[in-house]
Amino acid sequence: MTVVEIKGLTKTFPKGNVTALNGIDLQIEAGEFVSLIGPSGCGKSTLLRLIGDLTAPSEGTVEVNGKPAPRARADHDYGMVFQDSVLFDWRTVAKNVALPLEMLGWERAKRKQRVDEMLGLVELQGFGDHHPWQLSGGMQMRVAIARALAFEPALLLMDEPFGALDEMTRERLNIELLEIWRRMQSTVVFVTHSISEAVFLSTRVVVMSPRPGRIAGSVAVDLPQPRTNDTREETRFFELVTEVRELLRGVGADEHGSVGAEAR
Amino acid sequence: MNATRKIADWIPAIAVFFLGVVVWQVSIDIFDIQKFLLPKPGSIVSAFWTQRSTLWSAGWLTLKEALGGFAIGSALGILFATALARFRRISAALMPIAIAANAVPIIAFSPIFNAWFDPLSPSPRIATAGVLCFFPVFVNTLRGLTSVKPAQIELMRSYAAGEIEIFRRVRVPTALPFVFSALKVATVLAMIGAIVADYFGTFGSLGITIKNSVSLFDFETAWAAILTASILGVAMYVAVSLVERFALQWDPTRQERGTA
Image (cartoon, rainbow over all chains, first blue to last red):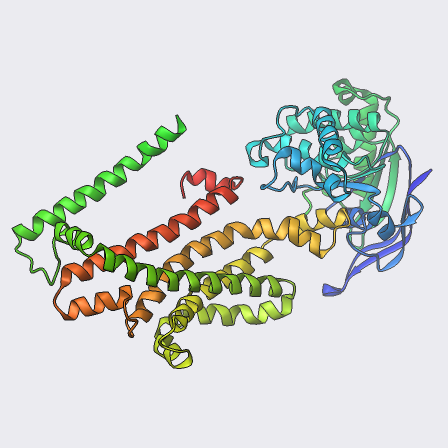
């Protein structure tokens, strides 16, 4: 089943007449874990926001679960995780996770049960009554993931969720995310600027080129599941990292492998 | 344990206060200060006690004016800000005007209000206090309602939330700390507005008690009336602070400051 279907997509911002994305065609199947990677200004975050109908395309179509993107958003077909965890300080951790459930009109008892499950999933049992600012950055991001998954959307959109975290926390959360993805059998679209993160997490890495943003190529990641810390040390892992890096070099990303932080 | 620590936090301030009063009392004898310049705190307190029933009823009259102005001015400020938060263009046009109006010494209009309203009713005093309260509450509430982070709006939109839901679940909680700091300022302004407006002749009010006592060289009574006004002003401020403390238990900046 096709979860995301993008055809002939172009996005122009009227301010300064910038073409952010040009002629994008992309199809994502159920159960895939697709990373979008590319240098600053390649429009990877814009592409994610178009899938979520947080911005509208200038030309072309975006379909999610076979429906136009606005319809899918209205139907709560996806959960979104942002670079900043975007938790509400006035809500406790449990109430932050419960927010989408409240808006869907779930009953209190059902909400509480689901929130407990979700906090268990991200290993934050016992933190429900804390406020977000009492948690570390990594824990805050886990709350954001629990919130995005609380209503069991089939599609998870993640915009550089681990970009602000330190390397060790990021690697641990990568493994947790894969475990969640496997258990929930969801589809993930993941924006990142880290090549190794993209290869480690994904079943497919889509490489984008800047000005205007286009899809330059894609790399199927055939590393076996489930992936562990040992995966990062396999020869095949390095081969795939190199393959992605070569593609990025071809699109004019800098020579040092790192693609550079997206200007936000 | 927490409660005892909080009391301990207050000890230095209380000690300094009483030390100040003692220095005041003693230095008047030492330097032979005339009582029209500064009466002794002891004689102020005794004037406060002997004339407690007059001062109390005068204080009650002025407090009612201040409270009325505070309630009306703050409510209108919040109402206007809420209405304008929906319309970016209009609020962008009005914000500089509101900030400029905030800088106008509104208290100067007090005699004008006596011409606009029945000077024998409390209306002109309530109007003075109300206009003084309106601008800071209006400006701060509008600022609070519009200082929501774009990512928070995007998150809500990803849940297909409409404007009303975004307003209720994001804008209002974001604005609350702004609103409360404005309300605390407004309690002080309301008391100032009521007393200054009283000077223009409110029979039996605190303002006129101060004015008349001074003209009769009864400085102890004037100071006792000022003491009454101070107690009432502090009471209003503390009342708002207590509501704030209850409503903003979650606020990390408030927690870091400890007491506020």
